[in-house]
Length: 468
Image 1: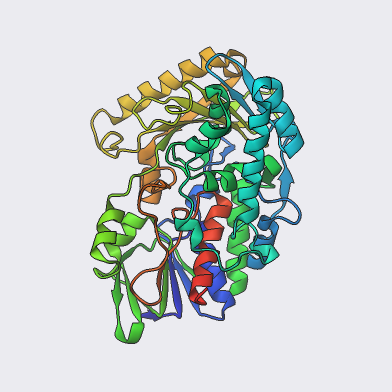
Image 2 (image 1 turned 90 degrees about the horizontal axis):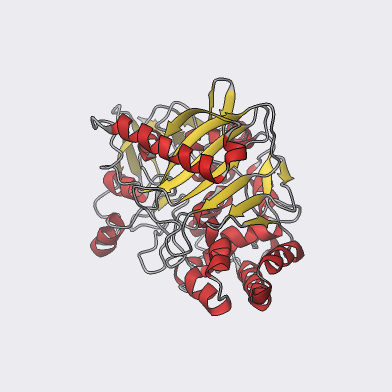
């Protein structure tokens, strides 16, 4: 039996953030990760000499004086953010073919939208004012300023106005509503179910600045690995936690699939909440909450095509977002994709990822089903055809190399949905605390998805340990 003060289950962003914070408390800490490498999603992969980003594309809040650099410094992460193309980091194409460039900087954003929708000028101003007000009151995005530092619990329960209802009160045009809601793909929840507050903090932050990180996901993974080594955190790869048991005096035992035993006082699980229920003690939650959590709806998955641009073309923008339906149905979780995000790397040769939201139902995307590969190939061909019809000048320069389905995510992460449980204002929130002293849950399902969302969740847990 190996004894530690603290064990973290899961080696993603939230798990490794928790490990670093626990080590900073002077606790002997270890991380248990199922895969052969830490951060398998954010690290990406290389095919035919081309590297593909699978977990990090861009982020808000990484500018000077913003939350991101504060968090990186606190965690000891050596990362170099850089600003994306200011006048159009993303391009959004409506079903009509109309293209809107997403610029950042309040004035640029307002001017771009007002130019395309002059009759909505006042609504655009009010929308951007409201977004900024939500960002300004956010406890977690302003923690580096010492603002509202005790207001963390309110982010889980006090923000029930939906993005759809807020837009309906401010804007008449369904096209414009669709454009400002299009980045719902960043958190996987439809506008009618996502809180306006979390939309503002996740998407609205991009209006102030959109950033990449030099080296992308691989650089993030390497920075965490270096920080863990410096902090003296032990890492156990290919080690899957099979059960968490209570031991004497508030202690805990983590038993692995290989029947190894780890003893600790503090355990932080950075895994899918439903997976946590499967390995946690039976009395981890009250029965009613446990039942609601087990039934929580998943976000859609992604069907992804991986390709490379030929040498005749190089694009500076980050994404092209193709909308096939308007606001209510643009992110529908069905067997057929309704919208696409075409994402571009900054490297040369330039990698292309075509992401298509799709149902994450494991029964539909079952790798063991006899028709799985036929279905996968047919869906890939359908997406290629759509891209060819909508963006022929781009499609002619793409050489497709591979594809993945929600089943691919399940293979490496243990679940098929892109962001885990849906952040639905009308459903049960995923809470980081449990009935068992010293046992916590973290991850992007706690606050919001994304790099900073995952970091914030673990900072939240760290404060809960202090009773804040």
